[in-house]
Length: 458
Image (cartoon, rainbow, N blue to C red; front, side):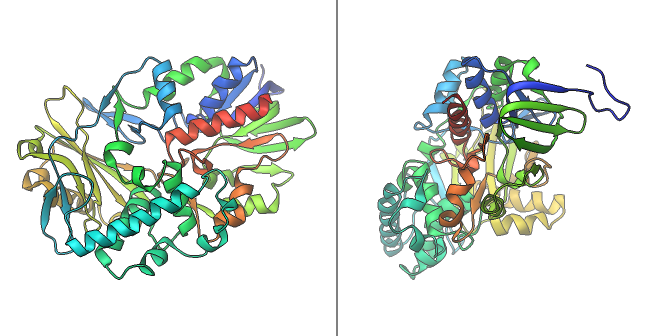
C-alpha cells in the first residue's frame, strides 16, 4: 500500500465489518464475527486495547486502573475468562467491616446492614425492600416499556426516597449504593427509573448492595489480561491501534470509515465506544435527530479510584476485613485489594460525584491527604503512610472522559432509551453504557458486543 504526500493511503482497505473501539465490546464482537467467518478490522484511537479495562506498572507494583471485579451472575465474563484459561481469586473479606455515620463515630459490624440506630435500620430496610420489589419488575433492556416508566422517570432517586422517609441517614445510605457507588452521580441527578435500571441490570437491588456478591472475584494477574488475550485471538492483522476515526459515510450497502491516514470500506460497522465519545465522529448523512439527542442526554459519571499499598495489611491484624462504608467520608467505600501471596497489603477506595468535583479542585498533595485521611478514619493512623499511592483519573483521559459509565438525566430513559440502542442502517452501537444486563460493567460490554455481532450475522 502506498501513501500520498499528505500521509493518507491512496486506496481503501476492505473488510466485512469495521469495528470502532478495541474495548471489551469491540473485541467481543470481533471474535464472534471472525468465528463465523467474517473479516473484521478493529480501529482503536488509543495505543492499547482494553478501553476502561487497564493496568499499569509503577515500579514493581501492578495497578489495576479500571474494572477489576467479577460477580457470580456475570456469566458472559466468567465464560470468557474460563475460555481464555485465566485464573481467578476471591476478594479478601474475613473480619469485621467498618461504618462511619453522620456523628463521625467508627462502628464495626458483620453482615450486610450498617450499625445504625434501630429506627434508622428499620427505615433503610423498608426502603430497600421497596427498591428490590420495583427493580425485579424492570427489564433493564427495555425499561421504557414498564407501565409506570414515565412516572418513575420524572422523579429523581433522591426525591423518591425523601418522599418516603424523613430519616436522613437511612436515605443517605440507601442512595449511596446506587448513586455514589454505581452511577457515580448525585442521587438528585438521575431518575428513579434510571436507578431501577442499575439495580435490575445486576439482578435486583439486593445483589447490587451486597459487596460479597457484586465484588466477588478478581483475575489473577489483572483483569487487563482478558482484553489482551482477546486481542491476540483477533490477531494483529485485524487491529489498527492509534487510529482515530473521523468520519463514517454510509450510503446503500457500503460504508466508508475515514481516519487521518487511511480509509476503510465495510458492509457493516459497529461503533463500540462510550456515548460521550460518539460526537467526535462526523456521520454522513447525520444520525437521526433523536439519536443525536440521546447521546447528548447520556453523561458520564465522575469517580476517582484510589489505591494505597502498605508493608503489611495492618487492618487484618485488628480483625478488620478492609471493607468500609460512609456517605459522610470523602472515600465513600473501601476494600482490601491485596493480591494473594503479596507480603504487603493494599486498600482500594472510591471518591465520586460532588465529592470528586471538590477533590479535583485541590492540589495533588491535598487530594492525597484527604483520601488517606478517610482511610485512616476507617482503619487507623497506619493508613496515612503507604509506600505507594495511585489515583485512577478517567475523566481526563481523552478517549474516556469519566467513569464508570454513562447514564441518562431525568426523563431521558423513556424519551431516548430505545433510540440510544437502535441501529442506523448497517451501523450498530455497542458499549456497556447502553447495556441491559451488566449495565456499566464489563459483563455489559461483552453482551453488547456479541449482540451487535449476532445482529450482523442474522
